[in-house]
Image (tube, protein in one colour):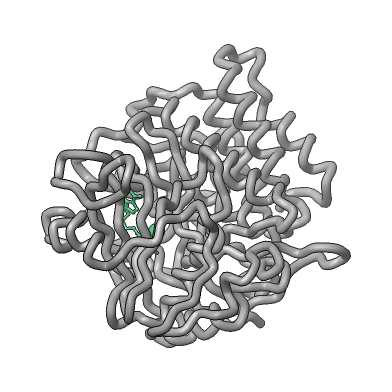
Length: 390
Ligand SMILES: Nc1ncnc2c1ncn2[C@@H]1O[C@H](COP(=O)(O)OP(=O)(O)OP(=O)(O)O)[C@@H](O)[C@H]1O
Ligand SMILES: [Mg+2]
């Protein structure tokens, strides 16, 4: 049985608490143990070995800019509340302005806009997440991975500077009342972008597992192009003859794969499950875990949706009513069938992320019903990989 330290699903609005004990401590203890594997160390050079709290001798990816704390204080108007973009378990995120050539702080409204994430003073243990984020994002460059521009490590302060994503998180668009609902076409484009980002990670030599896929970690640019953010829980996947990596359980309730929660065995298929949950959120407009409801009944979105997903006559009942019926019916059915495959309880029977990407791209290009792969075709393709779906 894995040692379960899952975060509640609506983490953007609460501190990242420990699901099992109510504190963040053991979540962080786990990160101390396992967030840096040997292969990650190999690929990241000497960055990890010499961190100390006050005298810091860091060898970071040279692509990253090292900011002073006062630079970032000036760039964000002294972290004033009016520049705050959001808050998560790690701390608050602020809007800042930098000169595009020198990256020195500039007057608000001039230069380039950035997002500055500041680790909460009281969660200094979050340093390991901060370090994992710098390690991974300092090296990875992909159109569907948010760009890390730099970092600040000064005394107790830990900050990260990212490209600014003007439309914020998918969570805000999908669930916030009063906002214009995002269209079907945009939802499918977002699903493709996320699948492409995960396929990229899984396709790396280190087979990076993202481990914390959820709507709040998917950020959107001005054209709703989606990028993965938050690599604090990411880790290298199994290599050689290993089928999995053993970890204690961290992630977010409602999104984490059941076998990972039960055993702590992590594989890229854990991300595939979480992707299935996000796809369900895109289709239904419902949260992976409705915290108000979960207070009384421990029912996840997956528990609620599965009976509909496996019944072709009832599958469209899961669809978000805010879409007002404005979606391509065959495409929605195929996407729902794909979500069901991703959510298979046996990870061996889930498709690979690259297969998910291919299927979604096909769906998106085939606007005419005859060209769209039917749920049955999607099924038969992936069912070959293992036993039948329950
Ligand atoms: N690069 C960015 N550009 C624009 N807004 C951002 C950026 N990064 C984060 N935000 C905003 O800040 C909010 C908080 O992000 P953060 O990653 O700290 O927390 P979270 O994802 O909501 O929760 P968790 O701590 O569980 O990851 C996001 O929901 C988003 O609205
Ligand atoms: Mg986040």
